[in-house]
Length: 75
Image: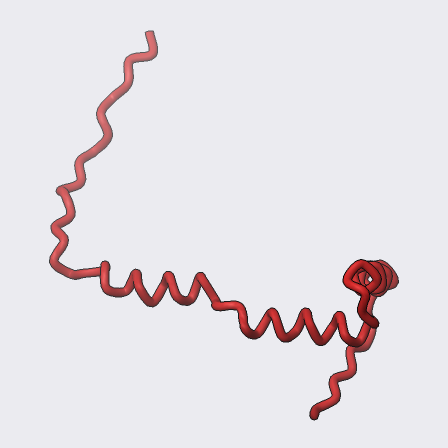
């Protein structure tokens, strides 16, 4: 197994992590492990959406002719 060291966590982040670990009845190390495992398993919804959107793009769309904006009478 690999070892990962995280340096320079702010005191607020460390405290939040400690509290989250306590709520989940885990050590801080186990909590960090669970967070990392969840993060890498979670699908990247944005990347998936962009891949699917590629099929919707096309060069066959005709754009309407642009015209100058009409004047506005503010009187």
